[in-house]
Length: 397
Ligand code: LRH
Ligand code: MN
Picture (cartoon, rainbow, N blue to C red):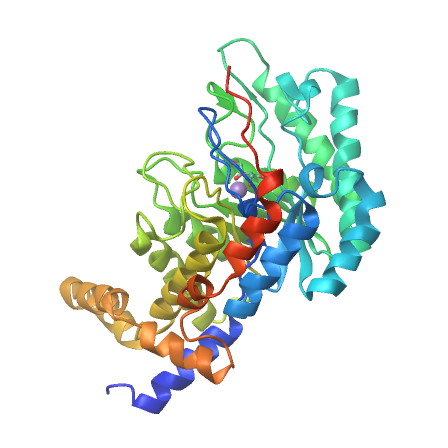
């Protein structure tokens, strides 16, 4: 029985009213690769400019009320910077989101941070982790989003099992310091910057560390942190089935952790992930998923890339929400493969942009946020204001 016009519209409004996605402060800053960084005049260099850009994305899209913060980049003085951030939250009307400890850029972490053979260095790293938890408490942020770059580059040079033990211990202690509403999200990554072994390399390792840490720890899935042949939506299904899915870092890639804009290479991948989530929700699973973007905009205009990403995420979330799951379940049960695939892919191929535009207009938002940004003077104005602070950068070697 085809879904009526109004029923579809109800589904559309229900889906988009519930979808919120967090944007990364570092997505507005000049970032690059080891081979170079191409500065942009409008790039944000201060936490105030990052909040300003985040607020503008939220004004245009209506669905990005929180800004993920990276401790060393956004709160270089730790907890002492909390009042500055609280003032910016008031001024710009968006909240601090997940708190990302930084245990990968200090010289001391050459051989690792929480997994470093040196006890004083592990303690130094643990102190940063506990400071990050205190920053989260002070800002009322729920998630401590932990990625450790720890690993090694050559076989035989580190004890993989000793490092497992050291990280277990650090996460257990960190978990003890959490406020009742806080969570630790353990992010995995198969390689880079380590190129022989990485201490938290896949979902199974992250799952173990989260389980070992305690009941307020979950797994974070960065879509760019998988070998190209891995079935990410199957990992997501497992993490939902076991109650261990905490959230996502969305981006896209062709080869490795390319951190390209979501849906630019394989939009069907994100559609398949969202389908698993809508299906699990429809089956009554209680899910508590933090949707976050983690990208570095090296070539695209940073504001455009961020607005484009949010809009694409909304459209893919909506396409997946409109899958006729009852009909699909029938075809799956009867193993009518072609009918199931035609229905499934058909939902992916439908153009939901007019539906999303209708939802935006009904919510007093620009029907096309990207066009609204491009026709506004925001980028030109911030370019003029910030150009002097965005001069050339040093070379790789
Ligand atoms: C590591 C990562 C992690 C961050 C960083 C900016 O590749 O995905 O989430 O902290 O990017
Ligand atoms: Mn990430």
